[in-house]
Length: 320
Image (cartoon, rainbow, N blue to C red; front, side, top):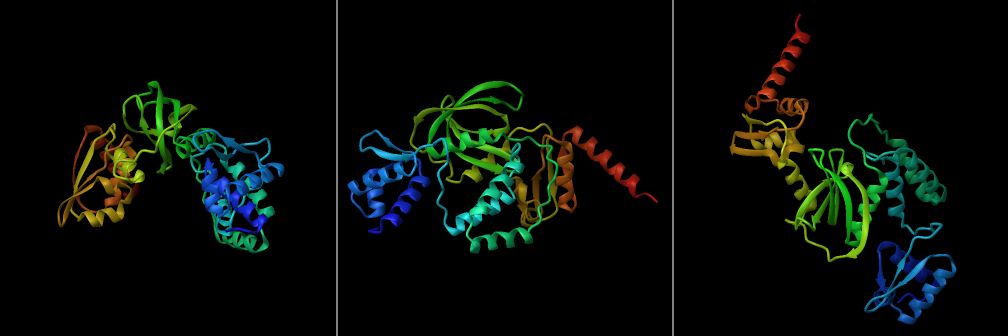
């Protein structure tokens, strides 16, 4: 039981910040106090400016609502250091996040205790970030945060989606997870119209709108969101087909092309196949070059033509 009131209120505030909604009974159990004590502590938090709302329902509950000013967050040492390091290296694939991350980092460092500031400074001094000019698709932060909130709250959300063929269609889904892979962000969700799981690229999503309707969380097929998304991406239709039969074991090739692990299939102890199919001819060339062993290739004519052109260009560049 937490008898020290300041410590108990800090613990209460920390709980409210970790979940969308708590029932009064759950909070009382976590704090080891009565429901009446929880209600008094909630009133004290409100007096301090924290926008704690009461919720309706069978048992009622509480949630920390958004206010005009963000109240102080409670972070333990590991959380504070993790956020500082994440801000230091943030913004991959997100539009306009570099400057925003630096502003947030400056604010956080001002309030860090000296013992933590030293840890963060040491990490920053020892870390160098190589920034590449991104030519790939970028995601709007507002889209990312809206979808993240819907995943957290198991709330049905609608949005407009641009397909691979540039068609536009509205979607209504039960969001489950956000997955980042290869510089792209994906939403894994259960499509209510198709009654099936679907994967959506965030850079093709616009106008996300929460519906206010919450549903029970669904279990992702196989139980592993990352593995499910990886397998679907690997089997998605692509523009250029390229299947290599490689004179090396599957384990050897997996170590060289870890990003294509699901596309490598063993034939025997010394031979495997690698599906290097892709929408971009240059990426097929890069994948095959990484194999670094002999192989035969079954591919579309465009792939063969591109490889011949690349090989001739290389020979020309290396000729005496």
